[in-house]
Each structure stands twice: as C-alpha cells, then as structure tokens.
Image (tube, rainbow, N blue to C red; front, top):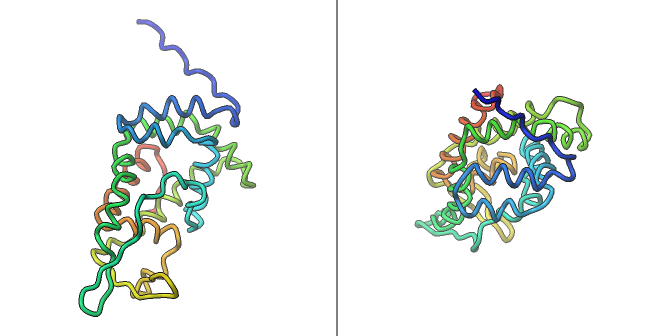
Length: 206
C-alpha cells in the first residue's frame, strides 16, 4: 500500500489565510461559505470571537460580515409586543451555512490548525494550551440559551428588551443567539453539540 503523504506544514500564523481558506472551503458546498472565507485574519478573528463568546460578549465587531440584512421588526398581539418572525428569518442563511458544515471535517481541520489557534490565543494574553477549554466554554455558553417560542418585549429607550428578567439577564452573546429565533437556536445548539463531541471537548451540559 502506498504511504499516505504527511500534511503540508502549517504556515506562520499571519500568513495562514490562504491555507485556512482552502481547507475550510471543503467543509460545505454552500456558496455563501466562500464569500465569508474571503476575509482576512481568519484564525485570529475566530479565536478572538470564541474568547468573546466564552466571556459572554457579543463578537459582532469581529464578525460584521455575518450581520443579517434587513431591519429588526416587531409585531403587536393585543397589549404585548413580540418579535416579528421575519426578524428571525434574517438569520436563516447564517444558520443554514453553519449547519451544512461537515462535522467530522470541522473536527479534523480544528485539530490540524490547533497550533495556530493556540498561538493566536497566547497572543491575546492567555497561557499556553488553553484554547480547547476556551472553545468548550463558548459552546457551553451558547448551549445554555433557553429555547423560547415567543418572548414578550417591552420598549426601552429607542429599542426593546425582554420582559422576562431571566431572558434579559442573559449575556450579550446569549441574547444574540436568542435573537435568531427558537428554530435557529435549536439548530445551532445541536450542531455545536455535535462539533464539540467530534473535536473531543469536555463541554459542560446545560
């Protein structure tokens, strides 16, 4: 039998975009994935976004290219204000791409790029060898978001907040997932569970 050639060596972190782009593009046939991979600093931004989520922060500034199109909408039912279903649908594309990723392929790529992730994590000021645990924290943070069918909103100085204190008390990262709607929350959480298991992370169950 022919020997399997070893994988090509990893490039320096700041020269890794081309390799990451090429390998990650094989994880899904969804055409939108290629557009998202066209951005620079892929490893550094991924690591910083994971760190944000693990700390409960919304990584919006790092992932602005994932922002949905269209305005946030509400609807009234009697005296109550609810999220218009069209607001949830704005996130369908993002969730479709994420759930289309090949789980085993994601795990394989994650392990292959692990040295780059660790270096980017150290560059944020963290000790060596801690990014797996950080990713597990981020996954646990998002998997702890409750699945709420139709949360009631109340007006709050030019915007809205959740009437339920338990929902309003969620972290910014968790509320961002909640804003995607119950169906999308379920899909994202299940995909995160599968990815965490495939990578071999010790993710705390909600």
